[in-house]
Length: 272
Length: 314
Image (cartoon, rainbow over all chains, first blue to last red; front, side):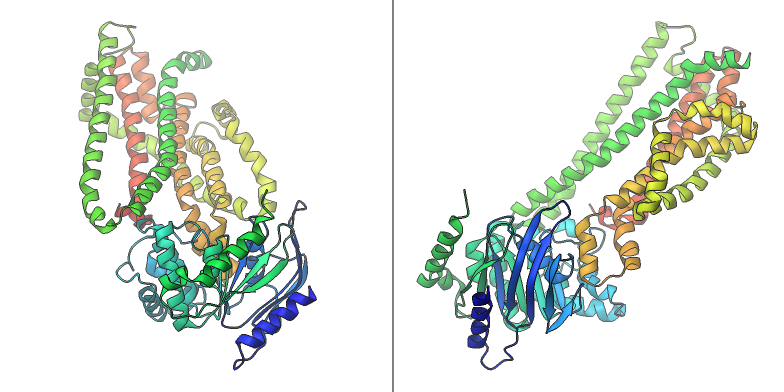
């Protein structure tokens, strides 16, 4: 446990020589037991370095989403604490935005209103928030669909709306819960490439939950491997690939393929 | 004497109620079925690469589909009316008129103005009752959905009221409220209340939990969550409850007019039955069935126009 957090901080130091090396999110000794006695997380410690994309990867039901929702302040924790910028939090905050697995779009609202919804809840004046929303709709590649309703869009497009909504509130931290799980394979690949492009300009800290090893390695700076329930962090793997390279090259890269294989060997032991 | 006529009325009474029942059933089935088909359409849309092109072609396919549905409805109506005509001609009972003679009698009733003056009377308790329970019932259902304490307090009552045959309470209403307008309004309220309240309650309880999490994660407070997420998301079921409530209100008002004092449309049915003018009696019954169906369909249409912008286009 101590070894892992030491390692994480070493990593952070290595990668962020010029930046502040304090982690932006820190979780300490988190345990979560659901009503009914299901223990999802046990004494979990982890630090998320600023400006990086960290993926939570593990066998299904290991509490990845639980951990993400605890960081988001959507779930109460049984024990432990979550620190954002060194301050303890116990609820959602303006510095965190969530992207949902099932998109969580309001079916009765247009794309424009959906994207502006975070700002609407913050009571930003209508003109201003629609302007911001239009900018992000354009950024995720949905311009022309402002007046469409979610049911008129494909799964991939709907998740782009979800992403635009999260970007529009200008949070430093993006929490993404299996955002591509209900999107078909081809759309997912395109979306992954676009997401990396977007993060290049937006400079966010991202915590990303997935069960796809390829996705984890392709997208992240580091992958946190979790043990089966009750979940805790087993290993943190640095997967930083040089950004800005041709996406196809990354997928053909020897190091990338080795990494996929290594993680698979680790995860395989937990499968029956 | 009074009780004896009440019992004799039972057969003709069961016919509007039975029809209403079928109407309610179709209505709720179409709500359930509507969801998966639209999903399927979306799936198909997802797979096709040229989605926009498909969007242009869709209406023609849709129009043909709608036309075909209209045709089948027409065929179904013709079959029912044809069977009615045959059964009347055979005849299965001297009290059972043919479809054509019923329609002629209906035309006469409309021409003489008998029907419109009857409806002017019948609609009064119906409108008042539906207005009262429409507002109170939705508020009560929403409160039950939002507050566990209120739910604990009221849900058992409505579950009992829903499964109890409310028509049996109508004599009690007469005992308490006499034979005036108040008793008839109360009959409408009692018949319509359970479905309106329980639908609103279920609507609130079945709100998509991830939309609520979404609202919380973007810092929505409880009031915003209720006004911007919970009530809009529940509105489909709330409106369905209101429509079914109006349909039940029709049952209530006809029951009241048959069992309490014959007024309005209940008076027409009772009167023509008493003087053995069966075509006119059936014309009155048919008119209330058609009127109820049209009203409930109009409500659906109005809901789509006013509150469902996302459905208008498709």
